[in-house]
Image 1 (cartoon, rainbow, N blue to C red):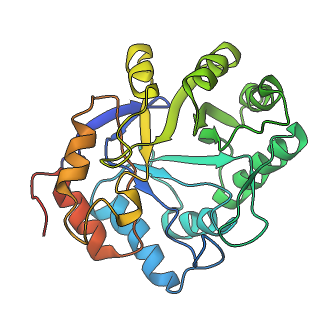
Image 2: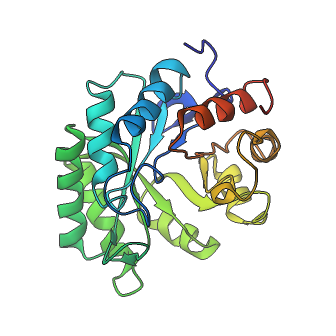
Length: 260
């Protein structure tokens, strides 16, 4: 097992975790829909990430599948190590493969959280993001629902995802924001929220850090991840893969081993 957490450590949602996390969006069928072609391989990726490589931040969402990956995480990793942070997201519906739509009605958000608790087999979600802000529902109602669930002990910390600087400022007036998840990579290089998070001492979690594979060929991931990590100690990327060998190369890239 890796003795040094890959990428070093960062504090997210009250836990000190590896700066390199694992994004799990790829652990489904095509179109982020249904079961993966090789379920055992998906379980192996999750187990190797935590038990072999020392990754202690797993990022998921109820929309992945939908529901598929939360079941996989439970089957692969439960009972969970105390140091493991599992972050999930709510607030998107999936009409069909490759289709995503925000749904921030308070009743729906509450139902999503309750369902994620059951699928992950936990009493509290360590970190729960509002996956997307629904423009048809007041932001105060959306975040207020998550805040109420926090007060009930069902959510530990609240995050926000795919937000503008204006969204970020408005959200912080409603709830303590524990983490922000936006796209950032060597192709999408500019996001003013990076600096806003740094100034506010809020972890910034770049999703699609390898630009869905476009930022690096298989195994050649050191440069894009190094560029991200150098942007600041508050940045904790979550590259994803469905291949155990690709996971090995990602970990080596941030652990000083370079590309393969």
